Length: 222
Ligand code: SAH
Ligand code: DHB
Ligand code: MG
Image 1 (cartoon, rainbow, N blue to C red):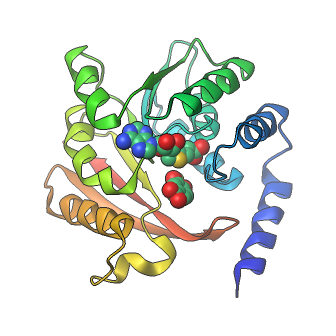
Image 2 (cartoon, rainbow, N blue to C red):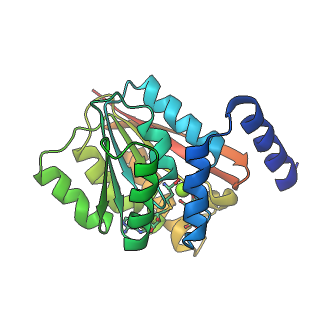
Image 3 (spheres, protein in one colour):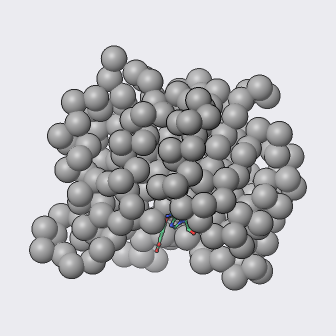
């Protein structure tokens, strides 16, 4: 088994279950044309996020790390018409591309893209009385994950689903000696989750076009 097999099967999954979608493809094309890195969730992962948000009956979603809005569009499609998604992004160029992609997707009325470092914008959400969110997707800078967890908890309620991306990092997550700041960030995040009585957590390993990686899945306890 190797990357070619994983990518081929991801192609097969898309062919079977994810009809070609002009809006999502345009979002990826516009993101690439603007020079954004090709690190959006894969189509199969995006659909998984949408299905989880539907399963959750989510009316409010918080995302950290917007990039060009690809995962945002998948998630926003799970919302009812009075729903709301707030997504946090530090790079002005990414915000501009994402806002445009979200507008072309017809989702601007549901989606609020906030410019700024998540550690600075998260407290503002609390001050504004936003939340609790039904679904929280953490996908911004990995060294920041440990500092985002307390804010995610403040902005949640019993039953909130918290998903964090890029947790496995080609297996490096299991290497306690790793010097990589991204690996150290997700390892610390996992330790905090494990020690946090307010959540019940597992990790899911994934392979596909983006290689070998994974998600944590946590439910805030009552
Ligand atoms: N969720 C997106 C991918 C996000 S990539 C998708 O799947 O389509 C990670 C994003 O987090 C990048 O756009 C990066 O600019 C942003 N980011 C990095 N550091 C950040 C920070 N401190 N606060 C908010 N966003 C940050
Ligand atoms: C990176 C970030 C992501 O959110 C991702 O899904 C893949 C890679 C990165 O920063 O390299
Ligand atoms: Mg990611």
